[in-house]
Length: 356
Ligand code: SF4
Image (cartoon, rainbow, N blue to C red; front, side):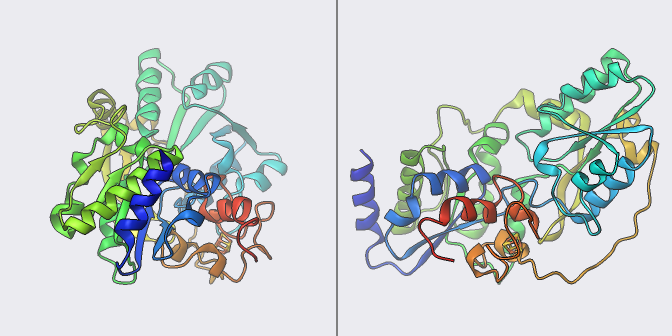
C-alpha cells in the first residue's frame, strides 16, 4: 500500500513550489528517520522538526533551579532519565548527582508516591516536564498524594502546551512552514478541535498522524491534498485513538490541578499561556511555593543553535558543532540529549544517509 501512497505524493507534489512540513513530536522525528521517509519523498518536500521534544524545550533556568534544590541534603530529586544531561547555565543534574546529590530516575510520576512514603524524613521533588500527553498523569499523582495525605511530595513544573507554541511559530517571520504533522500522543488528550486555529486563522493545513511509516506518508499526502485543493482543515489520520474533543477525563484532571501561565521555552522565549502551574488549591505540592530558591540567571553566549533547530529554521547538520564538539555523549545543547531530540535523531539515524 505504501507504494501507492508514495506515487500519489509524487503526483501531487509535481509542479508545486518547495514545501516545508513540520513534525511537532520527537517520536515522529525518530519514526521518520527509522522508516527512511526523508529519502523517498520528492525533492521539493522538506521535513523539518518543531519544538516537539519536551526535554529540548526545557529552559536552562529550570535546570538551574532543579540543581539548587538537588544540592540540599533533605531533598531527593525524582526525574525521567533523559533530563539528567540537559545543560543548565552552569551544570547538569548528572554532574550534581556524581557530586553526591540524591537524584533518582523514575518511569512514572506515580513512582514518586512510593519514594515519598519510603522516605518520610526527606522532601521528594518530581521534575514535572512534558506536554499535554504526560501532564494528566502528573496531575493524577498530585491528586493521589492529596488523597493519601502525603506531606513530603512536591512538584517543580515546567509542563507545556503545544498549541500556543505553534501559534508563536506562525507569528515568527523567520519560520517558513507550509503544513504541520500534529503530535498524535498530544492530540489523544487535547483532541483535534484545539488545532482549528491553524486553518481558520493561518490558512495552513495540518494532520494528526500516527507513528507508523504508512500513517506518516498518509499524513503527508493529506497535507498535499489540502494544498492542492486550497481547503485547509485539521485532518485526523489517527482516528483509532484521537477524537475531535480529546480525552475529556484527562483534561478534567489536568485543569483541576493546573492552570495556564506564561512559560519560558528554550530557544523560543516566553510564550503566553503555554505553561502549567499548580493551582492554589494544591499549592502545598508546589515546591516553589513551599521552599522558594533564588537562582541568578546567567545569560551565556552559546554557539548551540537549538533555538533555530526547534523552529525549523535550520536542520541540525547546519550547526557547526553537530557531530564534532556536540555528540550524544557530550552534548552541547539539549537537542542532542534526549533520544527524541532532533539533533540526537539526526546523529543516530542520519549518519548512514547524510555525510558530516
Ligand atoms: S548540534 Fe548540538 S550545539 Fe548544535 S544545535 Fe544541536 S544540540 Fe545545539
